[in-house]
Each structure stands twice: as structure tokens, then as C-alpha cells.
Image 1 (cartoon, rainbow, N blue to C red):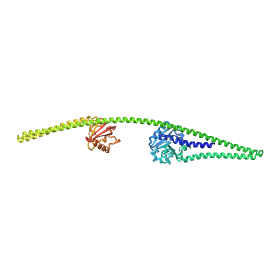
Image 2 (cartoon, rainbow, N blue to C red; image 1 turned 135 degrees about the horizontal axis):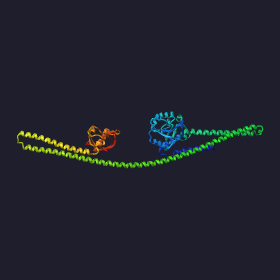
Image 3 (tube, rainbow, N blue to C red; image 1 turned 45 degrees about the vertical axis):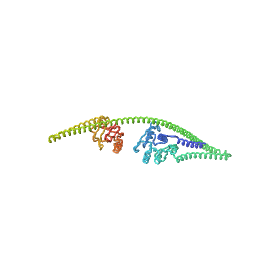
Image 4 (cartoon, rainbow, N blue to C red; image 1 turned 135 degrees about the vertical axis):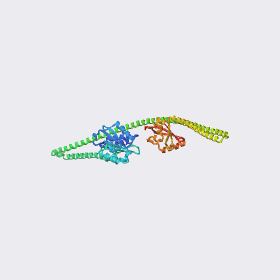
Length: 487
């Protein structure tokens, strides 16, 4: 009867394990960390009771795994000890850790890491490694249903001096491990059954012997008492066997309670998964609001670009005015020469020497007047240009063909902290962030675009004289060789 109950329990256990494997899961990292937490409950470390804290090291750069372990450390204790999470870059300097979780990015170092863990009695758990040869525990994902399970390397656990409960093999052992466990339990049951059979057979023999010697009861009283004593011993042994079977039944009931507890934990994980989905939905709403803010910012930038274009039109109109004044001055000079020619023609009858002297004198005077007019027009044009150039609140650089700055407006002093004379012979690379240096290849690409479109703009991270970095937008005009920087 007890054997039938035990076999029924084994069938029930396999059904529960299959149902557990079918539980829907979304957050692999959270589930793996929860499984690590439960696995550690089944492992015993040497001198475990002397530990002050329980330290878990993480090798690799999986942000989801790291976040899940940090959340575990804040909310749980392992074996009544505080959980510490440590990021490991060099396992030789990892310090006192009890578990090392190795993500897929660290698979190349697994051989040397395995030797270190075996020598220091550290539980080595790997994440979806191709081979469990160097691991103690290795997580896997079933390709048919995308469910997580784990493999166990009993040899490595033994070499690391880590002991484990047989229940761990039920969850993570392979077919061989399960067969060994089943065979061990079955052998124990068979041994108990053989003992019971031998006791019953012995009892039957003694009964037959008593019946045969019933006629000799008086003469064999002492022998009968001796046989009764033997029978009493056999009865006590049978009673002890019944007690062992009862203890086995009690163990099975405790195991049923453990399975029920596991079901509750799975329901809690499902609830956490739903909460995570709600959190992701909120994050998506925040992203949508950020997209609206970005659209508003792009509109503001477009308005600033239109304003800049209007400034360019004003500058062009001023240049056209200066050119008209220069042309008017040239026309005035030609009119003066024409009047001079008429005057000379009218006075051709004067003496030759006087004519030559007057002609030479007049030429010198005209040259002086022409130069004075040109200087006045040029000075006025330059003054108008400087007023417009320095009135712009944005920074304007003027470069030569070699890329060296030959002039800049007064805004350079306020925005960048440089005096105007200090920026001469510098290049845009001297004002660029070291993180994204202004490379010639990128500049040539922007020049080609500016050649087709006239003006091109692009984002640029710039650097002030004091070393401070700030973002700006750069406008490049290839026709005038002017670089305008808008903050």
C-alpha cells in the first residue's frame, strides 16, 4: 500500500514539473534571478554558518540581469543573511563571494573562471552557455516553447566542495540524474520489502515448527519460550518497518506542501509580470509626450533659421548699396575726366609748355581726388559692414581657403571668452569638443551640400576658452566663406 502511494507521488511530481515548465513568462532576467535565489537554498557551502553576508558576483554587462539582482538584494535575504551584489571585471580580485553569475558575454573566460571557482568553493552559474562542462549550473531556454530550465554538473559541484539536496536534481537534473535518483529511492524500497519478506518467511517457519512440535510442548517449553522471544524480536522489527514507512509518508506530505508553495511563487511572478506591463505602458506614454516636445523644439529651430535668412537678406542689401556707391564714384570720376578733356581741348591754343604743365597738374589732382573718393567710399562701406557684422548677436567666423580664421565678430568675446585678436589663425577644430572632433571628411561633406544648397546647418558641440562644452547649431555659407554659429 505504501509503495503504491510513493509511485503515485512520483507520477504527480512529474506532472507538476511539466505544468511548471509551461508557465508563461516575459521577463527572463527576473525569472533567472528568482531561480538563482531558489537554487542557493538547496546548496550548502563549507562553513556557511560563519558568513556575515551572502555575496553574489556578476560577470558580464547584461543591464537587465544587474537590475534584477539589485532589486532582489533590496527586497530579500538569503539564508537569513543580507544579500550583497558585486560587479566583477577581474575574477582574480573578486574578493569573498559565494556565487558568480556569468552572462553570455563572458563565455570566453569560462575555463579559467571555473578553476578559480572550484579552488574557492564558489557556485558558478552560467547563462545559456553552449556547454555545461565548466559550469555548476547552466540556464537554458527550450526552443520549442521559450521556457527556462537549468542543467546541473554534479562533478563540478563535488569538486567545489558544495553539497546539495536531492530535490535540486528533480528541478534541474538531466535524465541520467533523474534515473539515478529514482533508482536510489526504488532500491531503498526494495531493500525494505526484502527485509519484510524475510521477516514474514521466518515467522511462518517458526509457526510451522511450533505446530510440528506441539506434541512435545512439555518437553520443549524452554525451546518454545526461546522461539517466542525470537518471534517478539521479529514483531518489533516489523513494527519499526511500519514506523519508517509512516515517516516516508510524512516526507511525501511535506513535499506536497513545497509544491503548493512553488505554485504560489509562480502566481506572484505572474502578478509582477502584469505590474511590469503597466509600468512599460506608462513609459510609452512618457515617450509620446517627449516626441511632442521635440516637435515644438524643431519648430522653434525652423523659426530661428527663417530669422537668420532675413538677416542674410539685410546683409546682402547693404552690400548691394555699397557696390552702387562705388559704381557712382567711378562714374563721377569718368565725368570729371570727360570735363577735363573738354577743358583741355578748349585751351589747346595756349602755349605748349603751359598746356603740358596744366595737363600734368590736372592729372595729379584727378588722381588725388579719385583716391580720396575711393578711400571715402571704401571707409564708409567697411564701416557699414562692420556695424552690421558686429550687430549680429550670433558668432560669425570668416575663414580663408586653408580653414584658418581671419576675422570674427564681437560676439566671440561674450559667447566663447576669446578676444577678437586671439582667434586669428585658429581653426574650427580649436572650438570643437574633443568628444566629436571636427574632422576634414565631415567638413568636406558639409561643403558639398552647401555648394548645392547655398547654406547648410548641422548640430555642433563647441568648447569655450575656459574648457566648458555646450551645444550649438552651425550654419555654413560657402559663397561668402562665413560660418555662423547659433546657440
